[in-house]
Image 1: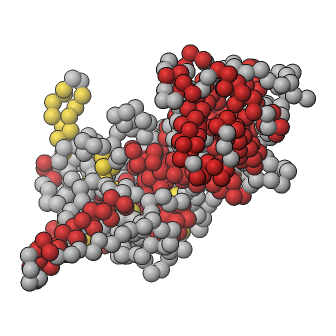
Image 2: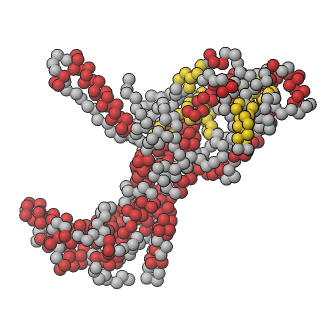
Image 3: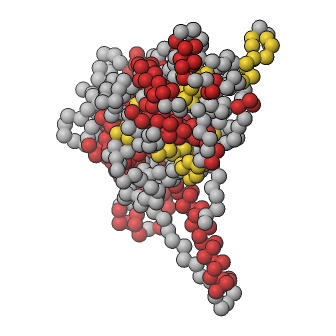
Length: 627
């Protein structure tokens, strides 16, 4: 058996760890059975490669379509932990060609946040989790809001009263003396043996005398002998608790009381009762939820037994925790907002990235590649989860962001359309306007009638496709494309290796030859007039063409200067050394002058995006007027 893995580790690291353990055990075994010393045992170490092929499944998947649900309470905005639970439920339903339901559990009217339900729906849609039944779409088992189902709960409470599985309790919560003007509840358990009242007496007190009452589930005598099955943790057993030890803040003491309240004094069902009734009537087959609800599962089984219903299969997944193993808060230590809307709007995380990231938190990805889009997650999903809580490390999120953006840009190139990257373009454009309010004013005028900010950003994304993390980070990395400040050029720009080779006269001569290319000389800071490509060419064809010609001109200029041709450059070591030194010095000079010496796209690509006039301005050269 493999050694236990603490926290969450990505697939590649899991593979490496497993490989090391396997190799270590194999080495030991061979050493024992070999005739010679262990040091002579030769080990074959297999190599792993990333693959896009469907993963081989080791975890169980239901053989029939699963009906799953996500049942949030609109008492706040959705945290990434809630979206993760919804995602697992969605993936299981889609993996088995089943249905994914959304149910709003809004019985706690006092704690409702006015716009929380709307935002929950918007966040789910943004993440690509479209429900088959629920609010806005309807379905055969509605309504899908608990506040609209009270008659259903009242009916089922009466069913349990009539068959003796539940009883009316007329006890009021016991309290201590006033503390600061407030009574402190000691227990909400039934302390007057209300279950021994005859149905007639209980009904008379409730309906004639109008005594306040709750409805409690009568606990089965063999309850502590019952064992329950969880798809992840296996067999679980009810915790034994004394009802007198219950500390409560109201008349709903949850599962701590021996006979749990099902309906409160105001006629509103408790979470547990409504949850079980709804799951049964909506024909839910699988419930995926966090381990904080595992303690409630025996009670839910008791309710199913009381009604004579078959319970769904339960799968409890570990909670998300930080590096200190504390429950993940709504904001990380680095200030990252961890609710779904914050990840989307403040941190610029893409929907496919967030779902990919959350899916890997606790789920044992059977494949070798951790970069997965929604259709790939559905294809590979199973019910193999790690036991215990999952440590969230945000480095993985930003790695996935870069990988997904690079994929999107390649898709845009392949499909010859900006559609796959339009959201990125819009986000960066918004960030540019916010960060530099005068940017558009400087680049739109009679002499620059064709500047299109979004087309310009598109070109930058096309040449710097593998570095995008957030709009803010991308703008900072590529700041030289949006503004130019000669003061930011490195102070030692003229003192690098081989700099003495680039005399002012030589630089002017080289630059004039490099910049004389006709197609490049006709470009401005914005090479295209729209974010679509209507000429039938590739999306980045103008950049590729100009960049290629610029590098060709650089090559030819250097050959002319050292007095070489292609043949002599290939055979003469002295010429080859001179060429390499001069080329290195020239490239460094160009990068320092054009982009502050910062790493980024190739020099030809930078020049193609900046355009002829801007390159001349930054290099201190006069430019030819264009028609």
